[in-house]
Image (cartoon, rainbow, N blue to C red):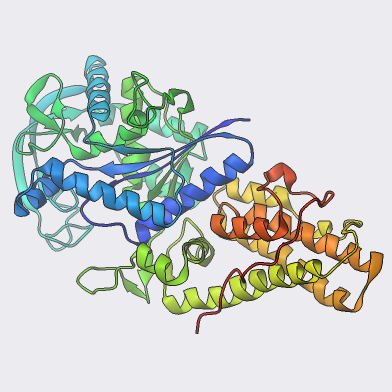
Length: 490
């Protein structure tokens, strides 16, 4: 049994979660659930990034304090994750006292190491993205990320000596090739670091809804620096106290940070450099996933095509939505969402392939009076080790393909054997293979579709298994025919 620590980004609470948030969080949930099945000691962290000028202004506009404003939004995130069955161990909020104490300690360590100095900062600032850009980075004089207006700011600031860690970062990348994942994103990061790193402004004087800089309370800590430290504060660093009442410091370094590709730089350059400065080991892997378009168009509130995870779960079921997110595109690449494609996968892979298989197996077994036992024949189509390796490598869509190959072989076995024409031991042998295949499939799909796995186990009369149980053995369940797992969508 090993330790496995997986995180989502600490989401900025400017609005309710959309498909992009759900995609990252479901992926992290699947990794957490899979490693629990493997017998690993798992810790799964998510949370909300709550400081910054944007939230301060939004709260003012609503006549609320910033704390009241972010309190409401944090509840929204928790409700959405509950709706789509996210099994996190801790939900870290950056406005919490434990987090603020951790940030103060972390920044103090950087300062004691001689890596922070005072100077003047001038740059183009995008309030919605809480990010500074150089003149060269602007696109037509606007934010290169969101396309909105930027403003020029000049103020006194404390700087982090990011440039000091250029060579150490490059050495870390070379010694730890999986850190920059997927591998096709590695060269971009390495080349940018090789081009040279500029020291980073890490404090503000104008932003008051933020954590005070430890050695000068006239300054507050830049929201991005604050948020990154959540990955440590969320497991109880440095005191052992955390908002989840867990002392989980032993889980560091993180096994994998799951992030969107737009924040890859912060996590693969700024964050490990900060950790070097504070004398802490960097995470083992940062996996930067791709983006979603919707019906071929960029997702935008102004266009009105933002996909609401709650709406999708209410309309099609949480498991169907989770399955589609992971099956439709590889985790690291971009993909397109459409309800038409979601319905096609429900009607095909879920209703026809999986639902009909379970229904046929349970119906046949419930009518059989003999003993369900036999010789494994379908086991030759099962490759649990390959599925495990794929998930370890965050190839979730390919892992689902592999599970479905086993399911399709089981469906073919039904058609080839024609059990409705058999009886006695011959029928018992066929049913044994089909029921054991169904039981194993319920284990393999449980991280992806936890509710569906429970329904299958209920009909088979078996308890939830682990990866060690993904082998053909004696069947000791009690068949109880239930409702069809998935209904076709018209």
